[in-house]
Image 1 (cartoon, one colour):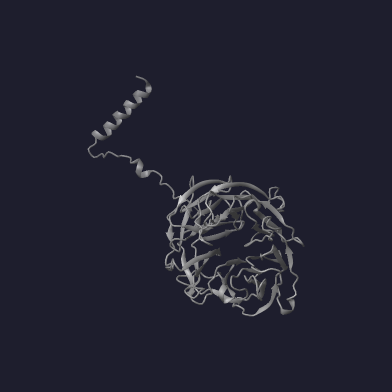
Image 2 (cartoon, rainbow, N blue to C red):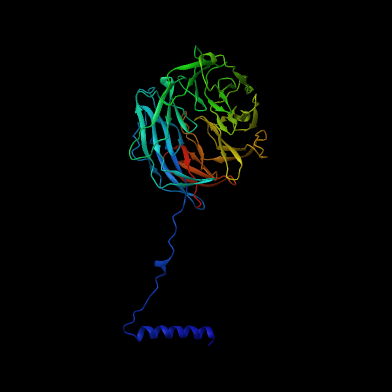
Length: 472
């Protein structure tokens, strides 16, 4: 017998003697399972808020770290009002300073019930110099609301300098909602003020939290091409300083960048110098026009809709099918020049409003879904553009990186489209596939889809808040 076997026999004898020879001695056992290290809870990457088109509810779930990442329990926001699924819709939403505001629209021009709800998201950031730590300990809850027959049926919501501006279309104006509120128990008083400006289906630019530019949608008549310029005041302001008249009407987009204000009328893009002290005598402001070309078949001038901004650039899409483009304007230039990136698409498809993110690796990426009307069938796609391949902060070298297939939409007019959002660290992208009742998760590092997760219902608009906390 070798040494190893003799050692084993010796251990058995010692054990027998300890148990059998001492009546007072108890056999001590070791339960390995009781002392095994507990599995740590997976850390939270971010919190998702999504609208369910089927139920008209706002839902939320935490995204959990893993390989691949997963979704925690999908929950309805507590005490969210029961909306009439036949007559009301959730419209645009945005987030600021730990809050989220969502608009509500009805089918009766605001005379049934429209307005807005403001939530405390339960997502908090603790700043630590050049970085921050995020917590997701609290559940979201409603802290303020305004739903009645006096809110003018909002459609568009804007965020400028961390302050919300909600268009009250039928009231020919917009409400400034300041989310700088103390998050106490129950509902809180929120600073809000109505401003006159714009009409019928309002888009809005607010320059330096000082001057509002509210647009009119009219394609003819006395309000064609009209833009109302109003001094912004926290308590509201029903006096319009003056109005501009763009060369064409049907204005459906406005934004501001680098001391300029941009508009999206029926023909191309118009811009003006931002007026930070608006007075009646400034009504002769010079209006500049940027042509986007014409449709080669109809010969009509091309136009865009909503804008997105990144640094000093204004980003937008125009054209469709083989002629779809991502457009870029450097607002810092004295006379901004159009930069275009082709986004070829299948018949019946056109581009959606661009979504922009600076990824964790420093790349600046633009995501554009291929959109279509409800009667167009076929595969659906997402195009990804890199804005600054040489990283000189100029986007003239922007180029299409790839186009990938995505799940199905469920288009009903303005509703049922894909929408994309990003965690604050630029690690992940999340988008909805309304026709499949799923959310897809993409790594922004390699632009590969990590998972597609069923969530039920018809998920449409969504927002991600926070980022994974990697420790102190």
